[in-house]
Each structure stands twice: as C-alpha cells, then as structure tokens.
Image 1: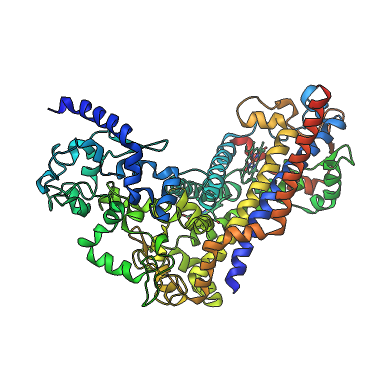
Image 2: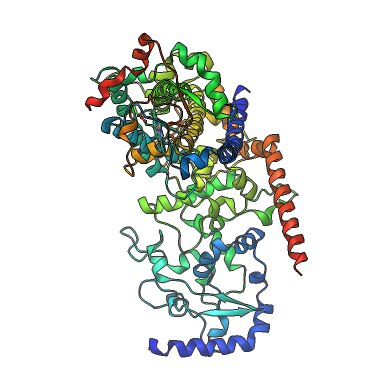
Length: 297
Length: 337
Ligand code: HEM
Ligand code: HEM
C-alpha cells in the first residue's frame, strides 16, 4: 500500500505547488504595491536612484555564466514540466532531448562557476560567504523588505538574503543533477554495466524500499520538489532584481551601464537611498570586500 | 464509357429519390446497426471511416430487370472494373431520412491499406474477400451485410479469431442462455476499421499505436478518461510514441477483465506486463510487488486529484469567484440599461 501513498504524495505536490505559485505571484504584486505606497518605487523608477555598487559594471565572465544558468534553468523548467504534464501534442521526444541537452550544459556550467568561485584568480566565493555580521543584521534586512525599516545595512556585494539564496542554489543543483540522472533507468553505463538509476539510488535505496524502480519513483519526487523550489526562488530573484536594482538588471542585459562613480559602495545614506553603510572593522571589511581581484577581469 | 458515369449516377440518384421510402423499408438490416456501431457513428472521429467504410447494396442503381450479378463482376480493386465501377465514385450516395449516406470506397485508401496489393497478394484482397455475401450471383443482399464484413476477417486471420473467441469481446452464449450483451460486443471491424486498415510497416504501426481512442476509447470512455497519469496516460494522449497504448497493457484479441487470472492486468501477470515492451522498447526493469502496486496510479490519479480536498476547494473557489464576478458584471450592466 505504500505505493498508493506515493501516488497521493505526487498528487499533493502538484496541487500544493500549483496553488502556492499564484499566491507567491500575488504576494510579489502586493510587495510592489508596498514599494509604490512607501515611495520607494517613485525614488527608483522616476528619480532613478539605485543602490551603490561595489563593482561596476558587472564583469563579463560571471555575466556569461549567469546567462547560461538563466537559459538552461529556463529550458529545464519548461521541458521538465512538459515531461510531467505534456501541454502540447507530440513533443515528448523533443522535450526530453531539450532536457538532456540543457542538463549537460548546466552541469558543466555549475562546475565552471564553482571553479570561478574557488579556483580562478578572482575567487569570488567570499562575496557569497554568510558571516557573523550578516547574521546579526539579518532582522534589519528582513524588516527593510517588509517596509518596517526605510533602509538595510550595506555590507558587501550581496545582502544576507541574496547570499543564502545563491548558496542554496548550489546544493539544489547538485541534488537535482543526482536525482535527475537517477531517472535514467534504461541506459546501461558501458564498463560497469549498471544503469544510472542503479548507480545513484538503486544499490542503497533499492533494497531498503523494494526495488530500483521504486527508488527511482522517490528520486523523481525529490527532483520535482526541487524543480518547484527553483521556480519559486528564481521568480522572487527576478522580481527583486527588477524592483530593487533595475540599474544592475539593465547592465546585466547590456541595456545600460552602472555608474562607475558609485562603484565604491561607501557613499553616505543621502546619496544611496535604501542603504546604510556600516563602518566595518578592518579585518571584517577585508572579508567582505575581499574580491577586489574581480576588477582584473 | 466512364464519361457516362456521372449520368448513370445522377440517374441512379433520381431513382433513389423516387424509391427512397420503399428502399429504406426493404432493408431492415441496415437501419439497425449493432449498438457499438451507432456509438461509433456518433463520434466525429469516425466520420472518415464511415465515409470510406460503408458500401451498401446500391439496388436502385441497377436498372430494373438487369441480369443478376455474376461472380466475375466483383473484380479486383485494381483497375476500375467490378464493384469499383460504382463504388469508386465519390458521388455515390443514398439519401436516408434526412441524411446522405456515402457508399463510396476510396481506391487510394484501399490500395494503401493492409489489404491493398502487395508482393504476397498482387491483386490485393478482393472486395468479395470480406463482403462474402456479395459473391453470389444474386442481387445485392438485403441481409446484415455490415456484420458479415466485420466478421469476415476470421477467414484468414484464424489465430486472432481464436484468441478473440476466448476473450470478453466474444459473444458468450451458454447452453439454454444467449448472451444478454451480445448486441454490444464488438466485431473485428468495430476496432480495426474497414477499408483503411493500416499496413504493419513502421508508419502503420505508429499510426496504430496512436489509435487508442478509435480502437478502445470510443466505447470504454470512462477508462479512456481515467487513463491520465503522468508518464503513461497523459503522455500517450499527447502522442508520445513510447507511452503505452491501451493494448500494450491490456492485451489485444483475448481481452479479459483484470479480475480474470489470464488477463495481463491481473495482479498475477503484472510483473510480466510492466516488464514487457512498448513500441519495441523495454518498459520497466526491477519490477517487484512493491513497485507493482504503484500501477494503481495509472487509472487512479485523475480520481485522486478530484478527491483531493485542497484541489476541490480551489476549484470551488474559482467557480465561486468567477460566478460572483459575472454577477457583479451583470449588475453593473443592468445599471446602464
Ligand atoms: C530572468 C531571469 C534572471 C534575472 C533577470 C536575473 C538577474 C540577476 C542579477 C541582476 C544578478 C546580480 C548580478 C551581480 O550583481 O553579480 C543575479 C545574480 C545571480 N543570479 Fe540571477 N537572474 C535571473 C535568473 C537566474 C537563474 C535562473 C538563476 C539560477 C537558478 C540565477 C542565479 C543567480 C546567482 C547564483 C547569482 C549570483 C551571482 C552570479 O552568479 O553571477 N539567476 N541575477
Ligand atoms: C542538473 C541536472 C539535471 C538532470 C541531470 C536532470 C535530469 C532529468 C531526467 C533524466 C529527467 C527524466 C526525463 C525523462 O523522463 O525522460 C528529468 C525530469 C524532470 N526534470 Fe530534470 N534534470 C536536471 C535539472 C533539472 C532542473 C534544474 C529542473 C527544474 C528546475 C528540472 C526539472 C525536471 C522536471 C520537472 C522533470 C519531470 C519530473 C517528473 O516527471 O516528475 N530538472 N530530469
């Protein structure tokens, strides 16, 4: 009977996420209304006052890598949802092909981005590290986003919410890759004569719950849940990139350039609405603004 | 000679009009098709099949008093001779009540079908190969000719007929008791069609694979609707070539209810069925009992979705809101007259 529960779980996941997503969209709409009512939207979109940037304009390589993520995740969401809910006729072989192609690119891309973060000359991983000051300032950041405070502390390139989201993307993508590959039930790997399913979930989860095929059904559930986490987080990510920092957004798509004069991020509150620079002790400042090397690119 | 054909047909039509009343009365067999047939006719998808598929005794076409049909009149479909002289004409129709009924058989469709000319049978299967009751020297018969044609397959396809005889689709008369459902049971032609039966080459197999609605769904509509799980049903209905058609799980000629232990969908056989093949590709590996109970998903997901309280709550809320909105819209409209 455990397996009827499996069906129930799948049905519940469909219902919950398809309900949740419109709610999130509405919530983002309400949030933007908040921007309008508090005058943030006016200051930004009419008076064109955007946050200070530590590094401007955004460098080409991270931009390129991010573009690949954008395209690949878009294709993966589209083709993945098609595999589960075929929404037009005759597309399964093609959409599978799209998924397989994009998944290969995204996996290479992930390794490349991790190398860029840890191994390259730039080593921008420090931009993403959540440090103690991030955690202590987190309530203030949250209060800024729910309109209780007029500004949030400026600590580095990304704020604590951004950092944690971007960090979260990494394990999410790794688990997505593993559970995704585990869905390949039929293709036998050459030398070891095992399928991907056997290799990733079959040999350990299979015996625990019954069979490899059943283990694949569980892997599928995880793959599907993370798919929705991606959709939700990326939706919020895109919304905030437009509503909080449209200037960076435009720079990102080659439609405008960030102002180099503001590239230091140390301007006073008057010059940078929404940001309260916190004078940091030197040791910590190094930690936060350490990635000056990125100017080399 | 063929140039005169339209004339002949028009003349025949006039005659038909004149004799329409009497002809209809004279052919009880045609007016009363089997129930499955009428269901079939009620579906738009079958329209083309009936267009090319029905050939009726065009009694009124034969000028009164001509000699009875001879066997050598029912010639091969190749070359317009024999039956195709009249039935090869797209204008060959009869008026029945307030309907036009076509008696046209497309030679192109027929020749492209499995029963058209091939290496093995260069002349193709003759009309009379299936329309057995027209092989006589008598007039076009008034008998239930459709039934004859739909069952004529057994003359050649004996193995399939044997299997069919053992399945739930066969009429199951017992000593002293005729099958009460006899009228509802499908004959070969009800599932397979008539003049357009596909050749079993790659294209034909692919077409057959897509044909689940025609073959099974028209009658088993509930099952067709509930066949809506993600990777089998939903994908199959959207044309996925590797998603299983009805018969990939349920078997073909010896169709049995899943409660029957010989049925491929009976619990005892599920391992072999799910571990089998669709379109030449292996389906599931590592099939065991735990996995097999997951098969309940296949026809039950749709119901589970409907029974899901959150889903029905949202559905109700949706209709509630849209009703309220349209009420408001009506009210607003009424203010402005
Ligand atoms: C229309 C879609 C998207 C837009 C407009 C967008 C916009 C942006 C912007 C403006 C930044 C800041 C860049 C910087 O200052 O360094 C950024 C960073 C980032 N975005 Fe997106 N994004 C989109 C989609 C995605 C997707 C699909 C993902 C991955 C699932 C993603 C992951 C990230 C990550 C990890 C960063 C951090 C830095 C980097 O990788 O360069 N974004 N995005
Ligand atoms: C990162 C590497 C990834 C790999 C290796 C991968 C692999 C796969 C594979 C093999 C399938 C099964 C396809 C089939 O049945 O033919 C699948 C399904 C799917 N993938 Fe991915 N995928 C990856 C990333 C993603 C991402 C990032 C998303 C969405 C954000 C995604 C969403 C989906 C969805 C929604 C399905 C259908 C799941 C279901 O049927 O329940 N995948 N993936």
